[in-house]
Length: 325
Image (cartoon, rainbow, N blue to C red; front, side):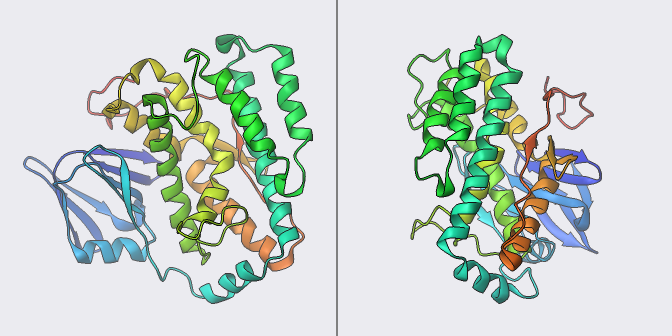
């Protein structure tokens, strides 16, 4: 079991079979040779990365009360299930109605902001890595041009145009890299995106928004349309972690060390509303700003900006139990 501590918030990553129960407002995790106790209010996220762990129903209920997402990975270590609280807000109907009543024009305004910030973050990441990926001034100018062409609703689909160019530059070592291909790099990217999506979905429910009703995404079979609208400006953080570890990503089996580094995205720094904060807190700030927008239709969204220079390999405590970073 791995525990990541950041400013008193804990992400608990269960990599071996354990038993989980509650006792006196605490989560008790026991295995063959260990018994650990965590005050529930200090837990941010739980990831169960094996198929042998047992978690009691009372534990799920108590964790749900605190809006703590429980992510369950399948046998391939891919996040496949998410347990969320369905009654975490005092007035969800009000927010639900505001989501339904939002005009197409306002949805397009929001989507433009989201895509602009996503492309800015992509451009900033390429700039930060320019000495490693042989980025030219012309390349940066292209990203700036894509930014200028984003219109209301991004009807010109500059998001896709910028993404195609961006991924070609970022993973240029793979000459025929295509984002939708079935390959180890995309597998790692998808793993990281799912970790972010789980945290965003949990925050949406906590603040009384319906993850199904998106601004842009509107797949009738997708319960997380809004989640995948809001993940966009955060994606470059995952892209960067995968880039920095591409030499370790050689096959479809994603090594534990890579999964751990991707999970730690929730504790990376970003800038939002002019302040440096952790991704997990930035998600809450962003969603609160969405509610403000739904209420008055005037304010711009608060969206995350990459905090550069990026630094993944921070000094570790004892959380990785000897795994080298």
